[in-house]
Image (cartoon, rainbow, N blue to C red):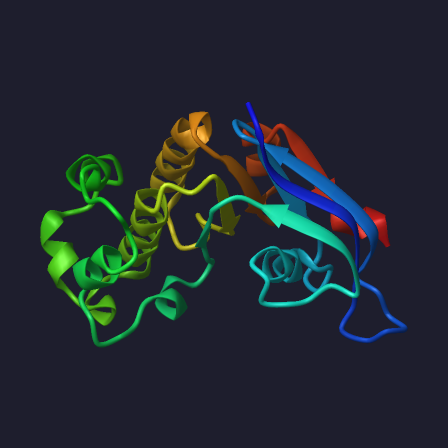
Length: 194
């Protein structure tokens, strides 16, 4: 199982005199789920922004293989004027697994031809997960993926994500310590880094 993410001596803050990360190190291997927990403002989402290179660290290195992301608010990750299918087919190389994943995510195939506002939050979040998995990432960044889902669907979704650990590593942001303890190989509490 190879390394899919290496963060070495990461230093970053929105102000030079108030660092969120100071010489932070993290390694994620294929087959691992690492849970990132902490209070609001502790730097959980900032870490994803640094990994995806939307933010530039002051110091340190971040090396990641192909990345796909699942965000807490699915409405912000889909364009409102295109169908779900158009937005999925634009970013994935192959739709071979589409039908199988639609079934595994308990989605109705007709939803693929609707626009985001025509779906419930839970349906759209499952479409977001569908798109991320079809991109076949080596590193999956998952930000509160089950917050819009009821408990039964949330459990099924996490079990589905875990099935993909043979091909990727997962970083999971969550406020749910029970979920983190149940599914992750390691929990990093950012409040303890302060």
